[in-house]
Length: 450
Image (tube, rainbow, N blue to C red):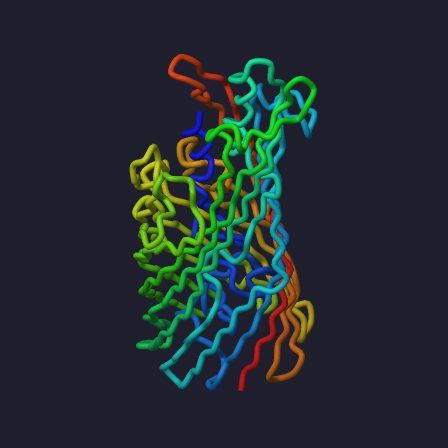
């Protein structure tokens, strides 16, 4: 029993990505992406992330600068079913409890700059290319509570249980990219770049005040048994990795085809641990774990149906199974990517219409399909396949300034995981987790061209 309680704080590796994209990659880096959704072949001042080779086809030579900010609201909900949960003294239930994690990020910035001179362009940007916020489970998670709910059964005369548990996970990957492109022909532009990724993660969790009811009185078990001792975790992780990026853009009349490939990023995280009495080795101060950013291929096509109306489509593939992600399971370091069925695939479609000379109206849709499995998912690290819908407008404020306003919502599928919980060597109990999320984003961007 002691080992099961300690284990609940072992794999605190919350996936905190608050944007669209793969398991570790944020693909929406501007307000114009938020309103178009499908932007892999779009040529615009603030589309440097999605289509870096397209910057060679900007209409004007000179400096192009874009600044965007996004505001994010997100919830993560896990409905956990386990018969002993019915003994919770603080929340009446029939063996099902709901755990909700909330995220609110008021400002997520990005800054892009491109200088174009005839056949040559030089570009760079700063953005949050992974993670982007924190998620807080104020009441912990079902994996925290399952072993504790069994304690009354081990104490003669005890009835019910109470516990205070908490989890907060924070992840940021700051990306700084520099690159350049060359146009060998009027219809072709080629891009090469390199992005530096600075990863900063922090995990804070605890299990405290385990109690039971005995003879009609609430008994605090902390000082009565090592099994019910408080457990604390406060660990920061940091690392650095480089991402080579290449891309091409082919433009012919009203057609534009763009391809980009980001190589796998080898990223090693090092622990800086202030508190950890879990005793299982995942958060030992100074230890290192691989947490690679997967390789990423994007292909996009935009077609001008008329001078005012454009349609676009895109495809993304994230090479998740080729990215090494280390974690600990049953005291053994394992490669978590081996638990995936396949890499992530995304498909997008968008439309844009020039309603006026100074006004663009756009909308788009994206389908994200993850290769997740029951073995890969846990309540401490989960995402599910989704559908994203966005819309917005672009304004030509002056000859040298454009404004973009966009919003999108991501609708995540429910994913139910049924399994058994090992109570003892001879007893297993059925349990399940139902995972779901919500995501809402509003974005504002300003482009300058001189």
